[in-house]
Image (cartoon, rainbow, N blue to C red):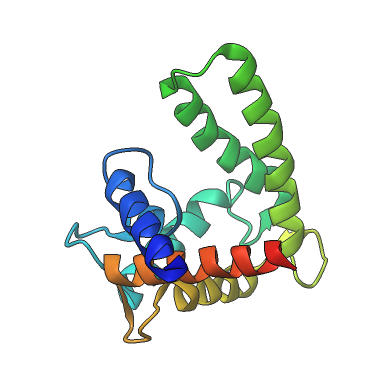
Length: 163
């Protein structure tokens, strides 16, 4: 019964994610499906990641500093907040929370702790993200993969919460 409820919840969330701001796997597909066929191949993902890395490297020195990383994220965040119907207080709270989290993400991505994200660090992070989303491990992320991944994550959270 609990599994059925989890799957029903995931399916409902997946359906709403298509019309609302995307989250989780739906966000992954939304963000990386450059040919708009509803799925993301590894080649499509890698090509988009390469474009994003170059765009984030504002000074074009081949690495991404914390300032560049947070600055690029902040610009995207401001666009999202501008389109939001939340109150200004809520937007301020969200901005502060998200920027703090961007600094944390930078620290995680900078695996060699040289205060720069190298292309290899960025690529390794991308490979992990793609592998996590590609539930059936066939080299393409589909909505079915996203739904299965979300169900597994939800079950893991529930299991953790019960301990």
